Amino acid sequence: MASPPPSPSSLGLLAVKRHEPELIFPAGATPRELKPLSDLEGQDWFRILLPLLLFYPNSPSMEGREDPVRVVKGALAKALVYYYPLAGRIREGPDHKLLVDCTGEGILFVEADADVSLEELSDSMQPPCGFLDEVLCDVAGSGDIIGCPLLSVQVTRLRCGGFILGIRLNHTISDSFGLKTVPRGSCGTRPREILNARDPPRVTCTHHEFDDIVIDTGSAAIMSDPKNMAHRSFFFGPREVASIKKRLPHHLVSRSSTYELLTACLWKCRTIALEIKPDEVVRLSCVINAPGLGVPRGYYGSTSVIAMVLSKAGHLCTSPLGYAVELVKKAKEMVGQEYVRSSIDASVIKGGLKHTTVRNYVVSNTTKVGFEEADFGWGTPVHGSVASAFPWMSIYVKYKTRKGEEGIVVPIMLPERAMQRFQEALAKMIDEGTAADDHCGGDSTTIRSKL
Image (spheres, one colour):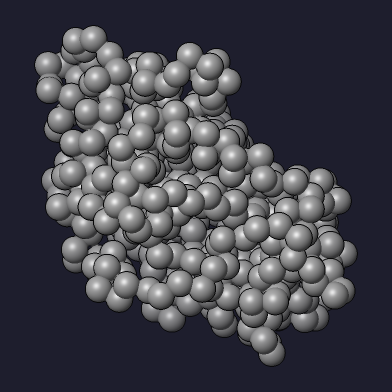
């Protein structure tokens, strides 16, 4: 196993000095109104806070320009005139219905400085980021979905002249795609009405994500205890992907995407690692951007649905990788317009809450979000991504190593012993798919991971 790089915080490299948190308000007048979120956005799996980090180097284009803190603060205040719901607060109405109260109360902002250079941070920038708490301040009283700022931002200037932009986003109001790509002035109610249930709601497709299942409280407690969990991320470059692909039957090699291949591989290795009984049913939930819903260009709300497939744990663990790949393909193929409508209707009938989490692995692909294109006037970041791992979910992130090799980083969070078994299963999956490989400089496995 390649030795994981130590985090800057463990080496004492990241000493951050923060100013007092402040609120940024819209730069102009905004409507005071109550906007219902869509039935899609009200589903429980959207009720999380997404931490995002973007790392900007010092560049010639920064010379002679204003302090990035002042520029980002000014840009946010102007943007909030158009994105005024972001300056409001989420409320919960009858039947768990979510609404955004457009109060203009503002978003949180923290100015900071760190005595470290971007070069020193190196590969520790990839998720799960070991110094996330230093560059994205968790202000007391701001960490809930209901009644708290919808957006928290920290700009941390670095010794080298670069800076880190940290963002914590309430996922009910937007997602990484929406936050990155939306032009001005598209926050009307009509798009969210499009994402509401039909009247009357009718379920026309199978939605295992809403199945009522008895929760194994013991396992749930282990998976939710942060003290028990190990955080790792795994880099999959062209060699790793090619090695795993060699395990597929010929008819799947040319028609399987990298996403399908990695998802199948990780789901299988994770199931092996958790030592789930062979007769137990395990679940894979693919987060897929909903097609053909008629939302206008520029809509920045969430438009993703979950497509879930099932397998007996024993069958998944002992079958060739092609079996899992076919299931991933099945999940993707399920998602059409009628499936999306049926999913929204099913969530309303079920009360809008509680997706099935028992023995479930959720995967979300952000490699096409375009974080690398986020230019605030000083050029593009060297890296940008969701910064955390989650016990029940992996978020795929585009990453370029210091040597310029492009690939995908996948953060994983598992109990410590299960993590060791996961690494062994993944190493076997990769090593058996290739000949002798010194890709990690002589280590016994081709996996590249970090703490």
